[in-house]
Structure formats: structure tokens, C-alpha cells
Length: 174
View 1 (cartoon, rainbow, N blue to C red):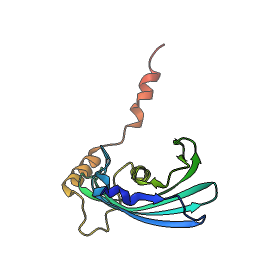
View 2 (cartoon, rainbow, N blue to C red; view 1 turned 120 degrees about the vertical axis):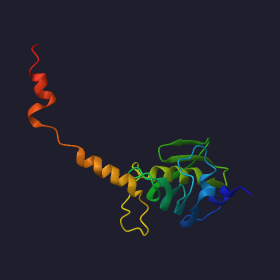
View 3 (cartoon, rainbow, N blue to C red; view 1 turned 180 degrees about the vertical axis):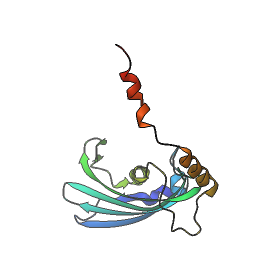
């Protein structure tokens, strides 16, 4: 059985109203996507499907943590990740995507949300992989790297305002 089949939701025959689905994304989920920046993590997904006569509105909420390497100290961390987004499904004669609108065939009975969930999780990850880990016990930081960074930060002196690059440029005779 395909582990991603749990992310397929029924769309044919459901009543026009609100429907809720819950999913868990872990390393099994992330392993199905080639060149994934996420190998391991635990993300809880809540999906609200609101069906009307003409379309479906899908609202996704994700929250959890993914394993990453800290950009500050290079330690392995559980990076908190949180996000939400909305898409719309509409019936059409051919399948296609436009921004947040997915056109599906009128004969389609199910809709696979796995790729949309995966893309949303990846986009929800912070670009800079650091977080406030001061309250974590034990603290995951690589203290040696942080000490070296602090030492080098102290050795950097601010530029001398009297001899800036702009002063040197002003002396050039054009």
C-alpha cells in the first residue's frame, strides 16, 4: 500500500459543507519526494475542506518540527515550523493549475493533497535555520562554534570614519 494514499481525500459525493481531515507527516512522508531538503521531522497537518456547489476551498495548517542543521552553530536541531495556506479546486474539462486554483476533471472522485502539503511545509520553513533555543534542555548548540564566533566578533573593530572608501573616491581627480 502506498503510504501517501492517506493524503488522498474524497471529493465526489461529499455534501456541500465543512469537512475536516488530520494528517501526520514524518520521515516516511518526506522520503517520497526526490531531493527533499527535509529528511526527518514530525509535522501535524489540519485540512479544512469547504465544499460549495461550484468549488472546494481547502485550507491547510501545518505545525511541528523538522530536523535541520543550525545556520549559527552547525548543531543538529529540531527546527520549529508553522504555516497555513489556502487553495481552491474547481471542475474543468482538463487538469491544470493557476496560482492557488487547481482545475480538476469533473469525473475525478479523489484528490491527492500530498504534494500540496509537502510544498507548503517546505515553503513554511524559515530561510535561516536558527531559533531561540535558550529554553531547550539540553541546549542543542555547538558551544565550541559559538565561542569561536564570539571571539571573532569581539576582534572586529568598527571602520574608522575618517578614512572611508568615499573619502578616497573624493580625492580622485576626474
